[in-house]
Image 1 (cartoon, rainbow, N blue to C red):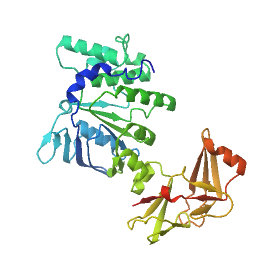
Image 2: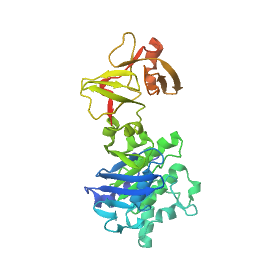
Image 3: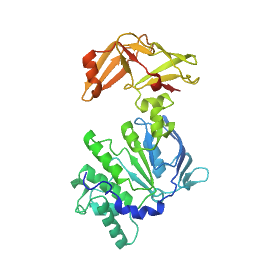
Image 4: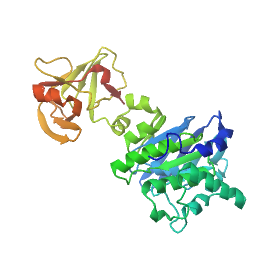
Length: 373
């Protein structure tokens, strides 16, 4: 990445000082019916980086478009920093161009026949000389000097992303919405542009909302997280806390938990995991409302020799060798669900398998059990 760390965005930092110390807030409570689909989303956050995670078609982009004013909900409200953008009962619906929101589309949505400088100036409404100065400021901030007269088709993907973000930053929105901006990229370019985007946004003092179905991207980028499933919000809170304890089966799946079993709670410290075919004993109390137990594929512990507590015999159903990970699929001991367990072994642990061979059992350490509703 060209330039020193922190170069991106330095020149608009001064212009954003008016927001220093200002408590940003986003409150969303919206509903809308679609054919075969109902959107019902509610969350409130003071975080500067918010993620929305969910499978394709779950309502993530519709939620983002509703915040932007591109889509109109049927009922509810949207409030940004104390200003009501939409309120069905009060008949308020502020036009998109009046909401002080920057929307970064997946395709960047640059005007193909306009130069870099013209694209950056497209959202400015001030006096001509002031606009020229602001464009020059953005060209310096996003390391686009010398590219002023180029068309978008003459730019790389990273350069296009910088132009799109410079266009947004030029008019200093209070909220920036990122709608899966990396989903069409290969992994190498995605990683590089994610790093660039994070650097560019370091000095931005407003709220950024990132929509994605990529959990690694969400984990890396956000402070708070909304998880959506079939139009509904199923979890909201601190990103790292939700990954550590998703609380619901749908949230566990979407945060990457591969092993989930129905359970029967026998008493406060014992449960049958039906789909794994084993009884699990816990020192901590099993919540009465738990209907499932989850376990992440990297956390299983190999056991050679005598069977220990909370173990399942290793009966291999299949495997896959990846460049940095080996994936093993284990048959349940007497499971009723028929779904194999996943055990993922990272590269630094391959030596133990090469030395000792496949283990006799896999153990579920209690501290990594996820109790789910």
